[in-house]
Image 1 (cartoon, helix red, strand yellow):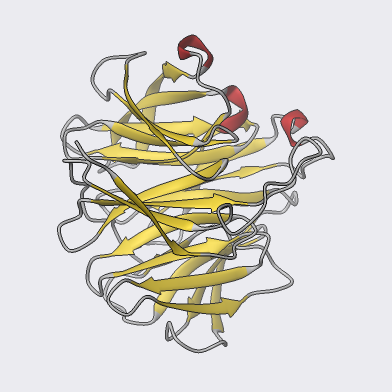
Image 2 (cartoon, helix red, strand yellow; image 1 turned 90 degrees about the vertical axis):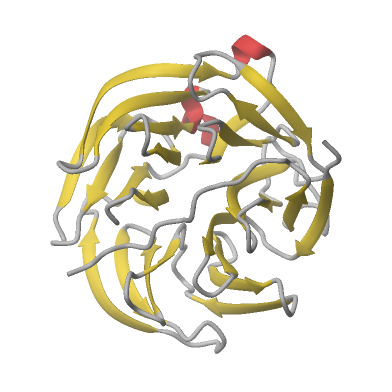
Length: 305
């Protein structure tokens, strides 16, 4: 396996939430602290950006059956917007939900039915490692029903779904582990939560952040403050399969993309952490990794009736 790691975009404060749009062959992602939505077109190397300031976005997911509508988060809201993917303006169409306690939404993805899974976290204190367990993992269905599933979350983050085994993998970053649930995608329910992979058990530095899954059922986990991506066995607990050392220290999230879904995109940040701020352009860039020898499944759009 000969890997190629190339920097394809630069300039994010905290890049996150990559979503590969197979229909249009482009990558959507966000800059949370830069308060922007972005689109990268590999065929032209063009990056388009629209500001959502003063709000902070954490996800951008295209709507099923639409060409220019997206589900995004704006701080504590789940919102549908219209954006042509090119201009520097957008239209806010509908607020689907607003978290009344002020908790902010973080990472989110759709399962095979087009249902969104996303979670929240409490207002970070000066030291983000002391965020209290006040977040919630939710699902949002096509009928606009928001359903809470798990409480006492500290920093809700990466999600991945294995449709074959009917499992959902989930990261609460400050727990330092990947958890696995049984998933009933028809009913939209999760059960039998168990710890699947613990970073400290394998001497992996940093914090688990965003995550994706390949067609073999193995997990690819971005390690914030760890300068790496780890490959975790999806069928055998506590099994580290591989490590990719990254130029950036704060690897935040991952998505398979490209025409054959065999390219791994990684977002990164230049977030001030522990009194130190990693410098751009290496940090805050989006990377494309090729030569992995695996593929991902197409990302699912959000279904809204």
